[in-house]
Length: 190
Ligand SMILES: [Zn+2]
Image 1 (cartoon, rainbow, N blue to C red):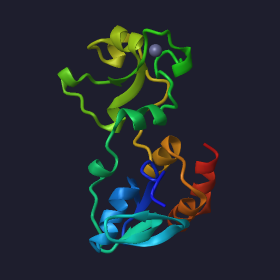
Image 2: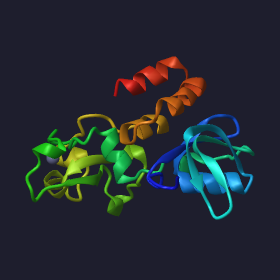
Image 3: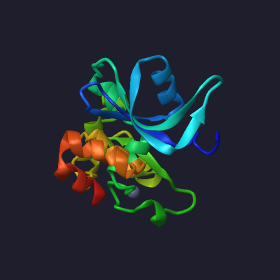
């Protein structure tokens, strides 16, 4: 049967079994067909079809060759991940998404503004509601007395993935294999 799998994601492991990222199943299949990855775990009950073959739906794939992934690519700061890191809470006034007024929204605030040499690194960006972002404007935290609730740190990729999109138990097994039981338990507690 060829339906209902387009939105499903596959956990991609490096050749070293390090969990790298979640990829759409279509992309995972392309890697397998091109012999760039092997299927480590499949959802045996489901199959996906391309023009000429039927294969089990991959749940976990492993790259055939080790790929060095620079940290800056591995952990790009998207707003989805940024908001998840900060638990969807404005780091200045502490309000969550549900506390915002209809005309407000969560935004990305640069502690050191871009115009003053700030970067998009994890340690310089925080989640801020649009009102706090406007209020802070072009100032440094020390200039306006607005310090974030938590010191912004670079989160672990796996924590982010878990926060944004839950892994299946089969996929979780590989998190445990690589990072250990404690990490998996921490993730499950989020
Ligand atoms: Zn705020």
